[in-house]
Length: 258
Image (cartoon, rainbow, N blue to C red; front, side, top):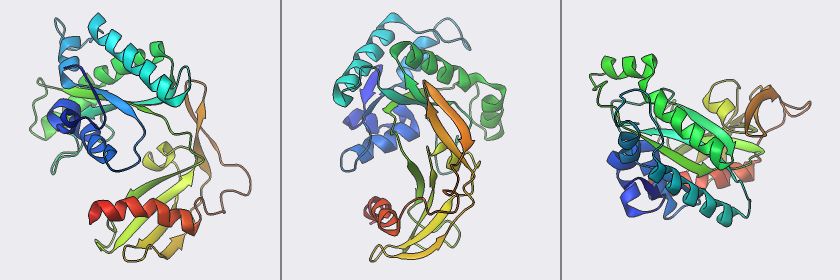
């Protein structure tokens, strides 16, 4: 089984699709998750037959990616839809081991050739010295690497946010915390921007606190990729989401944590 769609029951299995894709697949049943599919760990193993470190793309897997990508084109009404191509490690985001930042992610990828090239680069990232050293440090097998790859429709966002279902600073479970900024979310995740921070009460979704960050930089979608750029004049001091938008962003986090 080389390919599974998000929302399929088999795609809930982190051993097949890694932690990131499995969690998104579970969410897809009841929450608005952009459509996408995942190349399983079986595809990773097939790509490495005969070579431990240099993957290739077998024809059967290429054909499945092509059919799935064309399905996304039909769903979105765009001939070559922009997608995020993201590594999803089998041991990812476990209780003791998080592989965040160890493997590759490619945003705003468009066209089948670019998508398949990004898949190969994700697979290759499983064998970088940094990723292998990370595994060894945590007592995980560096030789038995298994990596899935998630291909998901890219959201063309003016504002992005990272949402915490509990307050990460105080541990309070009755609060949702939102970090938000202009452009794509990579600038928040990568730490290149100081985002706005909203604290929202779970009980009534009211904004209990707001700190406007110095949002000087943003991640911008370009043809076939992204770039870092300056936030347009006047916007750095303006709140990225309104209070009403912050409440709507918090709503799914409240339902997930209930």
